[in-house]
Image 1 (cartoon, rainbow, N blue to C red):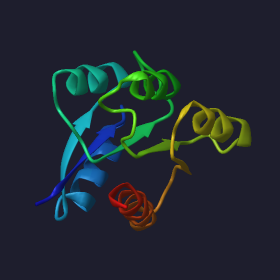
Image 2: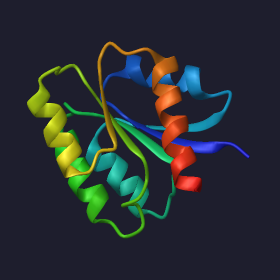
Image 3: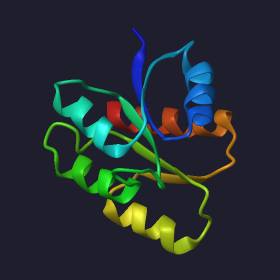
Length: 125
């Protein structure tokens, strides 16, 4: 059975790249911002992992992390943040708020997949 991956990014190109790359092994759900993603999750949907952007309209990545981690149902879901911001302070902010990892755009989808696999292995232990 395929695992479900939620991609939260306002850039259609990123959604398309990740959907195409991960589709053979994951059911990929896309949302354009943190608010849409939280509403979708709160509607009773569950995912195995989340990849979310740092800079999004309506609800940014940090607010999304906070809301996700305050949810009893979704607080343990592995979460990787993507960002065009390379500054260490942004990485630290995301990790402190509860992100499990942080990758800088542009990124290699194969590296992202390996990081997800490692996280998902740890969840199963």
